[in-house]
Amino acid sequence: QVQLLQSGAEVKKPGASVKVSCKASGYSFTGHYIHWVRQAPGQGLEWMGWINPNSAGTNYPRKFRGRITMTRDTSSTTVYMELSSLRLDDTAVYFCARDRAYCSPTHCPTLGSFDTWGQGTVVTVSS
Amino acid sequence: DIQMTQSPSTLSASVGDRVTITCRASQSISSWLAWYQQKPGKAPKLLIYDASVLENGVPSRFSGSGSGTEFTLTISSLQPDDVATYYCQQYNSYSLYTFGPGTKLEIK
Image: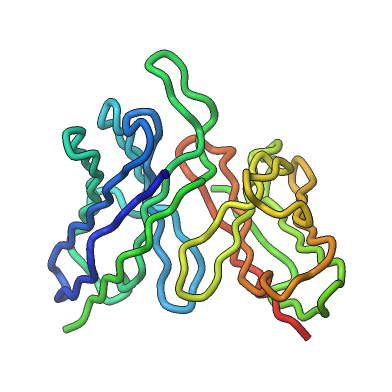
């Protein structure tokens, strides 16, 4: 079945970087964009960007540009999200999520609804 | 940037009740709206996409409607398993997707 399996919890100091992995299985890895969404303790959901596993193209909202990098490894069907210059308010659960839309090499429907989610990775930033 | 609001922020209802949650966008998003259910300690689950299309495997008591700037999620007969927080999310903008603040649904 379609599954996204994320790496384990991380504890980091302010100013450090964290890299979270998301291994996809059960579907065509290059056919679906992967998004990252985070949730601070007791708060709502915040979209952090997407990566196209086929082309490695990325899209980040202004808030995270310059601090976030998404990459992929097609041989291991794994997507990575690295966040640098960590601050205390980056403490959150980080989720990867598969876009519902299937993208062929020539056509990609409207992106944006997320049909499969990873289990979440807790990142704690503490001095 | 498109802003999303939801009402109410908290909702308490009885088993069997019909429940409605409203989501509003700060500008028209056509039908590019999804609804998610999130239970404590779990990842969100897609319920509805394109404003009214039920995701595979989601019980038929859930339904979505609306277009433009106003949308609703309806549970026709509330069940104990529906206790959760519900989020709407717009995907009209190719480069920026935003979630509503959530509606916490409780059983009376």
